[in-house]
Image (tube, rainbow over all chains, first blue to last red; front, side):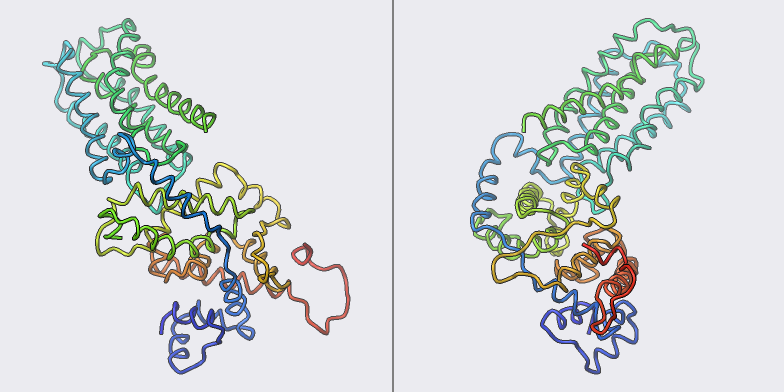
Amino acid sequence: MDCAEIRDSFTHGEVPSNAAVQAHLAVCPQCRELFEHDAEVGRSLASEAAFTVPFPDELFGQIEARVARETGLRAWLRSRPSKLRFLVALASALVAVALGGALALRSDFSAYPSARLVPLLGVYLLGICVALGQELFLSARRGSFADHFGLLLGALALPFLIALAPATDASRAFGPEGALGCFGYGALLTLPTAALLWAFDRDDRLSLRTVCLSAVALGLSANLVLELHCPSGNLQHVLLGHASLGLAWLLAWALTRRLSRIAS
Amino acid sequence: MAAYISGEMAAFRELFQRYTPLLQRAMARDLRSPEEANDLVQQTFLHLHRSRLDFEPGRKLKPWIFTIALNLKREYFRRSKRRHETSLEDDRVAEPFEGPRGQERSDAARETTRALSALPPDYREVIELHWFGGLSFPEVAEAVGSTVAAVKVRAHRGYVALRARLGEQVPEPEAVPGPKPSPEGIH
């Protein structure tokens, strides 16, 4: 005898009372509560459970029609297994980093201290993986925008913290110039990842959670690209050209969400 | 589920027939119209379709479907903010829609519905999944992403609170009309 069997007895109109029930009640405080005061709670819940909620005959036809409309590239992409969607999105972010570095590697890269580079890569990659994982896998603890706000703040602040860390003579000598170029370079290289994340999203209307997590993943990817591309440690430059990318992606996703809601 | 993943729409219909009544019953309680409940059920099956390749053979399907449904329901309430508004007004808890003819509810059933609606969401969620969704406590734990022990504690506290509320709401037959009744008794 277990809790589900006790429940089933109630829903079949009985107040269970045999020896097996008594043995279960001796060790199960929550089921004992069902029997208090002439089994008031057990009877009440059973009567509620007996109340069937109607659904129209055409409901299955409507679902079938919606499923039938699931055709095309986006439908195919969003129905891929989550592990594959995660790996493809991560690979896209990494390709952007590699491409960004290959096209224009920072001038002081040979002098770049590995003691800084390795942990920095680790922190960025961890942040990207956490954001993509929470966004793309089905989770029973799926948080809201507010739950991921800390992650978002961390992603927005990370470029500043890294700019404050000591790097090379070249990075200290660099001024605020070229911030717009960095912004465009980072945005352009992370655009394919943004398109993939949009295609992978399984909600018809973007949730705030998706907006937040996508901005985190894209902002961090863009800043990782720029870390290998731009030597500037100037705070003004970092604010305008690097850190602003996280915020820009957040606004872009929020705007997409707003437009999709208007369209629907 | 395996037959459905391999492309049999007949298997999809069978899943629909098996799980729709449970989903409807578990979802409808917080919603104000059958249309809202139907829409969430539709979205649940659409997500099931989009996520079908994520399903691991050997895993239980019911908690998995309910995880999808709960996420959609939470998102729905975030959008509409209805739950927030309801919780701010203790004496105006959501009253689910009525059933078809022949299923008119008794006053006692209405009181149970109101008492349930007034429970803290964490308690109500596990009670509704267990009683109206037909999930066992281990399945409820899987659906809400918690442990079996934690889910049982929530159920127990919910039952205690429910009994207290039902005790307040059901008048004694021989009770003499007295002073002003408690606010929970007025609806």
